[in-house]
Length: 494
Ligand code: SF4
Image (cartoon, rainbow, N blue to C red; front, side, top):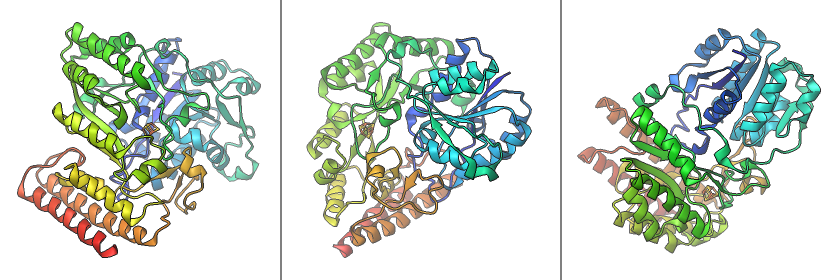
């Protein structure tokens, strides 16, 4: 086995337990795509999925040490304050495999490659952006023992030219970025992603994800999804037939009946984007596939006709990026949607029996108390505060400022001590009253979420707090407490 792909452990931290933005959903198939690309080019690979098996860092090192490899590809995920543990693990591993090439890929290393390579010189390279072709060329160079100079010809690769293999030599790092890699123009040419241990994935209740498109035609200031694919990026969709064939294969082989589209934005731009979605829905219906599925999308793409067809084909769940109930905030985010678009989208989905999950930012660095009030009134008017876990999330969520976003580049917020590799800036509020309000609400909501979690554990239920609330007295009480507390605290600041 000359190549190993690693999904490292992802321990949750108490403070960030409820945060969901440490890695975009669209990255969930990244290792699967790298694996299928390598396999289709006859490389013998092994996937070490410590995340799926819930291994500790120590267990993961032991597993890695059992393997004999020349190239280790690590799908690096930002783990808040636990991020350093991944590098401690890799440093330890490096002592056992001094000659192996260690490469990082994923969203986090794409945006933080300079800092990562400079701070951790035992890492040999970083794949920038879409990984398949770059990693394939790297595999060819490493497994065939090509000269180091061959690495400098691989587009989309960043390297530490003085690879010291020891962490003390930070001062000697010299980061080189090769020419950019162009995003794959026809996604149908990439083989379907390899699905590691499908049975266990299902047993653990993890959805079967499908990535039907890449990128996003939106350019929201808080989001780096499209920037990940480089400057020449635009929304790219696989053909409906290609997507259908992947779903059909899984449907037949594993008897799977539920799929979740991990696309950042399920709909492509404009009329064509919706027509493509309808084509896929028609294929599903024409071929008689009895499935249900979920999607993530923008409010302005929700329209009656398209949703009607998708629902008939099995659409059941929608994650809707409404982001705000304040027009000023939507404008500031460059969302190019209106509060009315948000309301209309929610109402259309509800007419089809779908209660969406929401992307919502209650507090952002520029928020005024008036914005927060508008957000709150919007949530009440649209009857979005019915279940305590959802209420808690909607009421306390504040913007996370990640590298790669326009907001990070605008230097909103200072780099704090926990920003290990300058990947995240704290959300610094301009208005001190909003800052105090946000802190108060954050503490209260996290406490309620903890109560809910304890109550759930008490009942031996293991479900995600985002989707679970019993319609019982305890839940109702907690929901009322959240709303009452928010209302009173906001009023006191106003
Ligand atoms: S619409 Fe969604 S995926 Fe697209 S840029 Fe905005 S937040 Fe990101």
